[in-house]
Image (cartoon, rainbow, N blue to C red; front, side, top):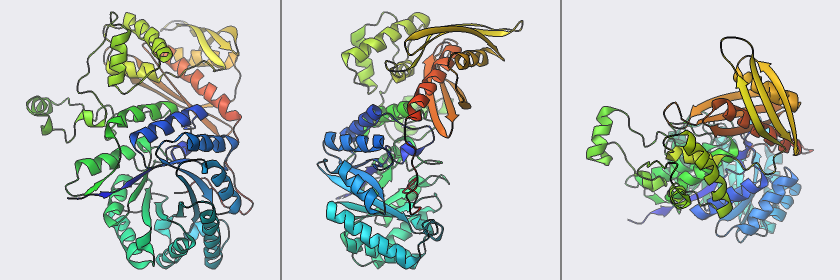
Length: 519
């Protein structure tokens, strides 16, 4: 049976990066784009070129570096946005302009346009984009809450103006699968010229139905799914790439569609996005969660030993996991470490391997066995070469008697500074020491500790989220000492916050059209 192709449109670098605290550096964006390209993503929405100079540079460079993927930039429905978008993507082998405007009653009120005025703007801006680029995508933001007759009218206008892809966003995660399928099906059957374009679906997960809604839209005739790695995105997130891709792969019997995704590369990019975004993947997350292929129940374990298909509908190897978790020890060498990391999906350059090897040896001296998850945590530790703040020394005194104190040496812009601070517990005392050495007004929003592996000698992975004047930054670190991991994560978040201080925040154009969210 011949299967229809479903295009995968990844918006991790645009919609995903809009998650509070998920801002990526320029180099991290280039790295993620390369991974997406290598795994077979059809279209990469690389960013919002007019949002900031940094976004423009990232989209422009990704456009130049992309090997096979179409590179897309986002633009509001005005000429300035569209021109800036084209300047950023025009160097790609396959460029695309994605322009949008909110069409529901609530969103029409924002720019204060009536139906006719908005229809005229849609015609003019899509036409302008089409005159610049052969590949134009148009989105009626909040389509699922737009009046049916008006939605048909503006979709027809966009098609006639030259859009080759019509994306139907469920911007607030409001729709349900039966509605999602029916909406696409009716649009294709009703709108003149609908059979000449590709319909896309862009779903948010506010009610936990993003994946189901996306797959339902495909059943209704959509042939492009917009998604993100790990489901990253505004509020509750977007459709998760790994979920829709594996659902189509595993259930091809009832969904006869295929993608061009190399699924064996899913785990690697999932881990990397979790690291650079600062958003750890929940343990029971479908496909990429730590427990997705774990079995603890005695009945389940017995079944797995007899036949893995008893309780697994896909193989760990299908998504890039090794079938076993063999520990390394302090006597293991670089070759063994390199082979294990490659098995886990990490291809490291020699200098990167040397850095990880040093940390591996240090960890192996403190632990009896170093497991896969320990190695992943080591690789995830951010390169601090250009960080303004670095932890050099920490000694904490705590217990039931006396004050909790932290003696700390922090390198700030190349200069060592030391202090002894007190607090309500070892972590509080340590954080107070950092605050006194590097004064700031950031507020701690999240402090989270997870054990990487089992046992009292397990590494602790700590996530810290800070907020300062509307800017949010997340830091992560891992160490067998929970307090050390906590301070490193706190310092990591501060370094990210320093970077964010220099960024231009997205805003609103003179006509009042917000460009915070295109779906």
